[in-house]
Length: 623
Ligand code: ADP
Ligand code: MG
Image 1: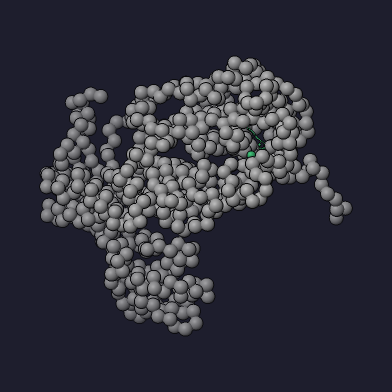
Image 2: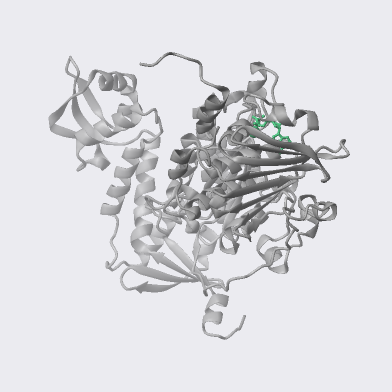
């Protein structure tokens, strides 16, 4: 071992930088967050070579006063808090004062900044924590940060970077998230000289979704807008038809901050459960606002994680808000007609910040003017309907808003449900106007109703009816049991036994009859009748596992899955002749369901095709 000594500031900075600056995308995140914190209304991000050789972030925010420029680059220098007591109430994205010092430790940084009050701006160059230049420069208000050659002085770390293309895609993802989190700020992203996207800053999230994800996505989303005195959820939920096989399209923001939270993701997915097939994930963009004192964002320097003080409550609220929003919108799948033509829309380009020509006029035309030059094309207007300002969004779903606000969700939900069925396709009244055409392929039923042709999958529909009936019995605790002879004895670990003891009553409610044998042994004497045929021991242990993970639900997920399988097995199959009377009975049963439109596995039970669509297909009408 060598002699013990205190490391130099430079070395400390380099080591600390590793925490904050992992790759070019972390630099972009920190710089854009600084721009947002500075009150900017427009931010432009430009990168070259995936940000490895060049990153430039320009904003029209407050700027940094000349006499504070050097301080800003010191470690733990921040203008955002005075001491730790400010952290619980923090509303800015940053507060650790680590980003600029870390970036300057591992890259070549050029800063140009000017406040409104100052007549002249400042240019500061710092490379590998070494100051190179500090002088006056004539620029308009705001800040431009250029970061060149990341890790130029730490080759070992540079080697860990992926290809320029991959690094660039991480940056784009960060920019998308930042833009989504702040629809009120115009964000433009340029890579390799090409504008990838540009948001208007108008505050309309639907427009934002159009600009970032395109027309097909923007026309398949449903607004969500609910609040209590402690929590509000606003945004859009993708229709189940937009489902994906990764979680990459799950966007959620807490108090204006893009975060990663298993709690939130799982809660939304639970809300979607009835509508999605297994291993599929929804598209959604939601903003969640909670009191700043009920979250802790101080978990990790990159601040992507959050912890909630009332996590379980929040999760339950999110789940029910999502599922009732989806339910209110009729989820019948429409048969798509044609491949939609790709609509190319030209974004009015905002002039770029200088690099070679640092002229005043050019600068005046940049970030701050973007919203004005941002005309909405007719095509966008068609998809978006009337573009509403952020404040106007709540008006879109008044009924639903009341539903969630009311304490007694169950009762009000039923009311909404009734309303929905009143003038909808699956309703008592509608049924009187049905003209049943008949069964085809011994699997599907064709029904004419008003200007629509309904097509129903008899297996999916029956499966759904069976499934809901079982779930209802479970929820009402009226499930019958089946005696196991002989009983099955299970030996638990002390931890499992503890959980079992805590939740004895739940097992009873689920239709289990259990007997303690002393020690950690439990005998299963009876199991829920409708799950007879499942492996009883495995089911029991799976429920225990779920309870151990803290997931305490009305109907445990594993039971739910088993019920879905049972419903599937016992439902009338495809390729089975059914009479019209049997069909009518099935339809009547479907009317009693909350969501008759999807089977428990998320497949549709009914799809429709309108008369107009048929006419188009036969070219009777031309679009
Ligand atoms: P933090 O954001 O945690 O305060 P940073 O190292 O990111 O720490 O930035 C240090 C300080 O520099 C900030 O507190 C802020 O006062 C100033 N600053 C950084 N970027 C900008 C910007 N784009 N506009 C105005 N001020 C900025
Ligand atoms: Mg910062």
